[in-house]
Length: 225
Image (cartoon, rainbow, N blue to C red; front, top):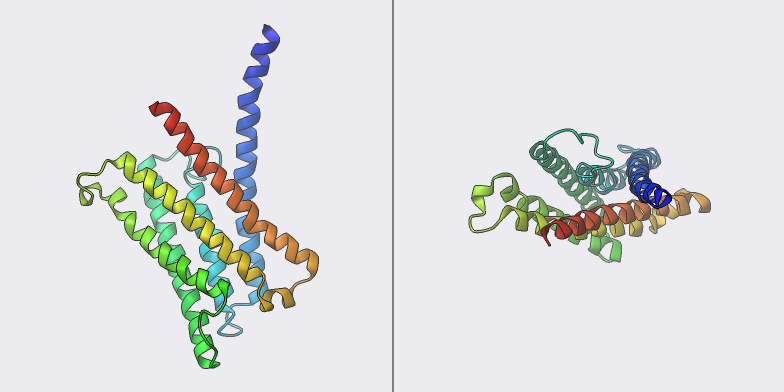
């Protein structure tokens, strides 16, 4: 009986430790990956160089950190009230959108100068879609900050919809990054083992973020039932 109690107490500790380790790993990945792409692209060396730099900042750094703010195990402002987390989250998402728009503008103007067609690859099409979705997601978050703008809607329901659509947006951004890593520019700039490690970064971050969001949703569902 004592053994069973000890075992049941150790499970939540192991669970909490694994969550904390996963969140710390995600912080590490998004920072290291963003620095790596910045060093590789050398922003300012050409017009194109701003595209991978800004897009990586948007979808690997700012968006990931914006979601991790709500992680109970890995938030850098864990002790702050939820309202403060929401404001910081929205600021990071606005930075994400700004960088995404700048990255899109850089590649569009670069193609225009070189007389190349626009949005002819899956990377380009999905990237354009992702930037548009990020804009809509940031705009749709305004009623969560100023709830009087969403009369007739419960705050809990708005948060659930925002979390679900936010996860879809994050996955779109992750897939866009992965497709970018398959581009001619990136594959020619790195060696094979570096390419595999680079692909692992957004893929692993996406899995951890997906687990965080779905776990939080399931926990709330259990409390409501």
